[in-house]
Length: 47
Image (cartoon, rainbow, N blue to C red):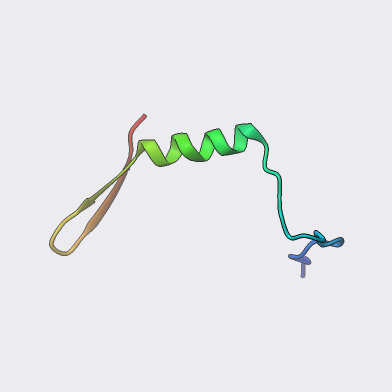
């Protein structure tokens, strides 16, 4: 089984993501649209 943890943990627990990662997540959240129905929930990605 693969180990799912880091070999050397961060001392202060903070991570420094790349700017492109942050931009990708922000753009994805802007494009995501959730439509709530009576019994269903639809998620659409607007590109």
